[in-house]
Image (cartoon, rainbow, N blue to C red; front, side, top):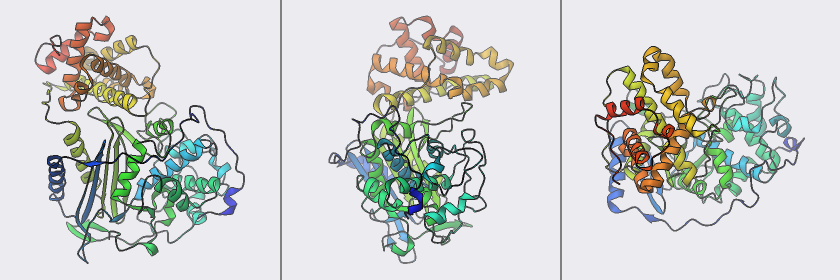
Length: 528
């Protein structure tokens, strides 16, 4: 889909600060993987089958990677009418996971100095007309460019077979929905602009570029653009659930959303992509960190989306993920870069996002949380609930970011001094302040992890996690997603008492009293 006119007006951009030339992507083969122990394989299989028993389904594939261990399961039928079973070789529409492929390609070209993240996309893609405001590559990667998502078309719209120029024509006539940087607007068409930029800069079609620079290095041997004319017998037929019954999907051509949702791949391919990202084989560690760092709007509101990936904490795990939804398919790729885990899922039934997430979360619990007992909160009334919400968010964001920055490609954000930050958290969770204005208190608590609050909860929680890891060890730290926020806080305060931490790092007596109330027991010095 390369068009010569897209090459007009190119500039050889310099590599942005922070991308070391010594950190070039490499193609070292991954370490030979081993299967999970038999009991873990059986538990994974049982977890998936329990989810499939909930409602009608067709085909499903699941892939799991943890360190050097790998498991792939294939379930049901890739083609119900023909009775063809799902296999690891089955290919599925990737839908919006394509955006992650596109983001990798863009960052590769950034590392080569051929794209500037802060370049106006019009300078790379002249077919995109100048708008009221310039739109940068960085903003497009983070869905902050104000570009509409499908305009008057819905996600099930059939664009018909189009090339790059035709795909751009679908969006070029629309004005921006918001000033870039001010609002998160998820947009497939924004990623089509990035696909056109890839073609313009590389001189290759989008599909050929992915094949040579993304799919090839990641070992994605069956990945390709989703062209119905070239699908083989292994591609999954698509279905949807209507009135409780499984019916065939609407037939649509997705070439009009090529770089935002126009690829297909097997579950092995998708897992290989996740593995290559964890191993920094596609882009450098620095660029991977950029992709996994959530962006924010101009007023400091977190979008929970980086460059081609959504990010959020789950019980102290740092999650990096992208889902896909189109006629014929539901997909999910979920990475835990701080814990070296990749989970890939694909179904040929539409609307399975909740089901795929339940499976993925169940796998995380199975692999990483064990059977540690959880310390439950004894909440009495709305004030206790808000205090506990704040404690839980300090724990969840703090532990997640610590693991991501220590064992993954991330960096801890924020600039404020820690003693003052601990005092701020104590004031934020002060019972009397919450009682006077609970709605305002709740709003402050829910925003306290964001850039507009200088990442307050992240920085305090990450310091607590580091203190616990230094005192009790990494294995103990890994137990807290199962044991919960109260165990995290109580152990931290016990360690602090034994180390005689300065007063601000012990919070204040009011918050310590609330912790005793919520746990129902006194905080004793650690005996670990």
